[in-house]
Amino acid sequence: MRSVPSFSIFRHQGYRHYWIARQLISAERQMVAIAIGWQIYDLSRLTRSIEESAFMLGLVGLTQFVPILVLSLPGGQAADRFDRKKILVYSNIVRFFVISSLFAASFMPAHIAIPAIFFAAFGNGAVSAFTPSASNSLYPRLVPRDELPLAIAWNSLGMQGAAMLGPAIGGFLFIGGAYVVYGAAAFLTAVAVVMFATAETPPHEPVHNVRGWSMIVDGLKYVFNNKLVLGSITLDLIVVFFGSVTALLPVFARDILMVGSEGLGLLRAAPAVGAAIVAFLLAANPLERKVGPWLLGSIVIYGLSMLGFGFSKIFWLSLLMLAIGGAADMVSMFIRQSIVQHATPDHMRGRVSSVSFIFIAASNQLGEFESGVAARFLGPIGAVFLGGVVSLVTVASWLKLFPTLSRADRFEEVEGEAKRETSPSATS
Image (cartoon, rainbow, N blue to C red):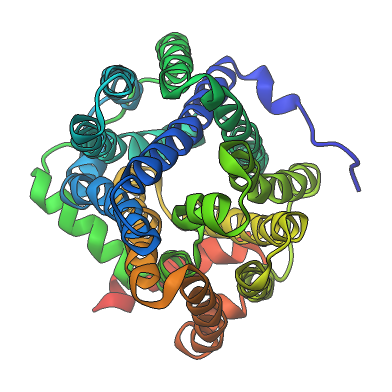
């Protein structure tokens, strides 16, 4: 049993540059999310109630989800047809200009700044419709097949490290003003673009003689015929859609726990602290057995931790509940990502990643809208309680709906099961 994860994966220059760029973008996104959330809630509270301002936070999530819903499937087939590295470079250049517009909006009065922030949120959603498919399709080709679990673990570890530091840094920088956060985020994005552009990647092997719409349909069919993939990504959809508290953290920070923007940064970072600890352990010793039971068990712990957070009025206890939830979610995310990668052939990765990302975006951005709506009618504490209960009910349901997933043992067996489920004889 290893005490620290192996660094051998970073001997591959392409993966090394990719990994650095990905973590810079992850940190930037967390910082921007902190600034947008606090700005929208704070500006809304000038003229609106707590419940109405919480609903405005939900609308930010909906605004980001709409372009993701419309553009993610085309983004997936683009990742299979065109050079994935170029997609990452060009889309993050667009992201740089979106962040620059937020920088400008931070100097505007409230009646102009709020619409400008929503416009930028829409732009962020449009960029996010193209980057995940290209990113998730590229990195498996940057390392040997037998090193893929280590690459997945390091991706998770890096992402959680960025998610841990990004909100804390964002909350601290917000003391100087929103424009300071956006300026720092723009700088990180520019560096990431350079890292993507200089990464050594294998020549792209596009899919030929297939129309774009046919490729999209093939990707959807593959996901819905593969019960392991379908069960994994829909599990995330339901649990995070109802169970995530991210959108409501400005409400808890400002009006329930009363800890200000610095406290908001710590609340946003707490799940990443728990997740980073688990990601470190997984990078050193990736899960190899009973992955299905581990997956469902982690969701049970996540749901219970969200119930604890909803009822807590003590800041340190709230941080602890969020950290436990983040740790449980890290186990779930590692297993789900591993299942999808092992169960998907390379020529389908872009399209399957796009379908998966639509589900992830629905759970995150559309879930933020659900949180805002629930908080509008149930109050913020009632909305969190609802999410925790739904998480527990979902686990019980998945035991019946996806028995193959709940009994899954090794990832290698997942790969074989996926081939059987999607073979012509299985789908005829």
